[in-house]
Length: 543
Image (cartoon, rainbow, N blue to C red; front, side, top):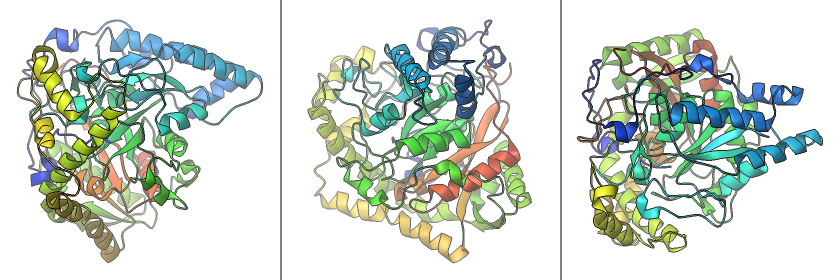
């Protein structure tokens, strides 16, 4: 749901093709912030019995009696203790659910009685800490200002998750306020949760704002997880961490009960190790919610089961538009991209070069204006009804100033302050910017129609940069999230490979409610390429 600021104003002023080095990071993060970066017994992926396991296999093992939901849940809890809180100390989980084993026991009882609710029955899921859960866990967006905020009710998508029989394992850390606090933020850091690390290379950034969800899935701390995106916050961390992420059409999933940035662009989305697992979670989360009117637009357009569209031959006869600008830049990234294009061709796709970013890049400043107005409006509405000590954006800003040493030790809150200065949604500045931003829909639709495209494809984002709390994030180029984000269109990223153990994702997106179409081509690419690899928890790219 949340717009990431990893590339400062990337969607606002275009992308530069910045090259990144491969030497160990000269990184100012303290051991207190990230934990010791040391390899310890039990930290490597192969030591974990559930390593890289899929939902289907978990269901088979629970059905056969080899595992129970309780034993699976306990294995993930032990895994979190071993490598998230100790060992490499990834720090992706901000809070565990004290009721997780109780939920698992209930699901086991139901299974024993012959009731299996569906493919997620008894499956442990992690949830980003900006999504309400009406239980004993807090919802804070990683902010100390919201410490203690326990929701009375589940967010709509969490209710969907519970009804499916899933086990709510815990909450994941995120870039505080979904990376909409400062222009100099370090993605994956929050004042409540500290810094999350990339499990592939520990001194590298997992990206934001769904950093915890991305790192947790990559490190096999759960079966699947839920992230949120406004502009790149599902896609970018999925790419950096080497997993699959789906940003659905805005309207397919309800946003009620989720701390907002933008009513125009926000959506939750699945994060998984395989396209099929992501499709399973997407099928469960989708639904019409009377408290989120935009979901009414999904009537007759959503699907009950997105897995039926998964076809290993799904690229055959398809016309795929590839972003031409990504054919140049850092040789490692472009090398992976060119290899991916050859795979698309081999699988029967026709490749058409396009230059989408030339058109949508002009809309970046308008997008930022829209987000600022809508953030102020949405956060004020959320906080006014929440159980937090702060009741407005102004209260949050004041709290951070009063608790600067703990709340803002590395970077400040100039984006929050800029949002507070904005007026209401009836402002001409807002309405003009909104009209320009959603013109991205016409740009994408026209380009697809003119070129007879089934999907648009490009590098999701470049390599993960070093964690740098002092200077903040830096641009590694190749950012392809803004077009689909501004349009509210569906977008999926699939692992494309890695260089120096740094993963890069390949993106596919299309027009509104064409989740089935992009899942089909993404699955076909995934099955033909098999580029997902489990992380090795390296200290740095050099060792």
